Image (tube, rainbow, N blue to C red):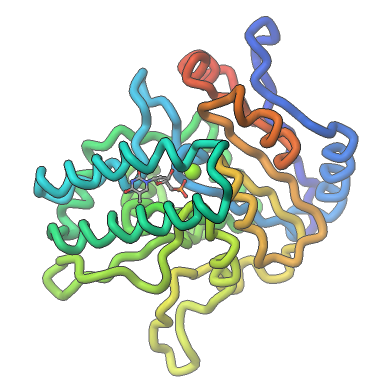
Amino acid sequence: DQHAVNVECPKVANPNMSPNIVIGNPDELAKKKAAIRAAGMSSLQVIADFDMTLTKYMVEGRRGQSTHALLSQGSSDYDRKRQELFDLYYPMEISPLIPVDEKTELMETWWGKSHALLVEGGLNIENIRNSVERGTVGFREGITEFFEILDGENVPLLIFSAGLADIIEEILRQKLHRVFPNIRVVSNRMNFDKDGNLIGFVGKTIHVLNKNEHALEMAAPLHDEEGHAVASNGNGASIVKGRKNVLLLGDHIGDLGMSDGVAYDNRISVGFLNENVENWLDTYSKAFDIVVLVSSAVSSKSQSLIKTS
Ligand code: TMP
Ligand code: MG
């Protein structure tokens, strides 16, 4: 039951446009593609970041919102406080000048404060539904088709996000017109009381620079031997078992850590470089097998030009 794997790298539809795909080492990529193809679909798993990887960086001319950013908790005071944190910390997140350990601490602080504000300011399930309805969020071109191909071939897709699991699942519900049984979400998961009010988060916080530490949770079971829910962010479970080839999609260097829990044979990594292109391109093209450039300058045009075939 082995199908040939067709993992083509994204192509620029119009060669006259600025090139927006960068492949650091074409020979190595060709080898990985051949190995993955030879092993077949039954050996493949896909691990994808969510915000600005599966979703668009620009949505109809506006900056796309992350799961955190689109969430309106029904208190303008608290929404403003979280926005102020974003304005302070996001430039640090994307800065190439801050050393990793220093940045890790900053990100821990940001996530800690942001989650605390969500609990303190109040949030209920209804806010989540409404926020997603109103949010500036959309999947990249080709993503729905990609999901369909993976589902058709029974290839598991793990969405691994430092955002909010409950929002991701609501976005999947609202933006896709069907349920994909092959998709699992590993992300910061909310804990609600019986009236649907947020009372806290489940497990350890996942931020953009500690995904590697959470990678093993993907293999964690959802239930213990007695059938009780396990307190873990992960719910990848057995669908990835024995799948030794990985296609990894991310927009942040830290996203490369998403596959740390997998003893893979081959991994093809695709990095979406959304901004600060000049500063990051060198690092990205060494770290990822394929870099997709979607700088703000070319984003609205290039969005429609990038096709995964
Ligand atoms: P990702 O792992 O799915 O890409 O999600 C992480 C993004 O969430 C990261 O780029 C920053 C963003 N974020 C906000 O927009 N607001 C917040 O309050 C926090 C904590 C993160
Ligand atoms: Mg991201």
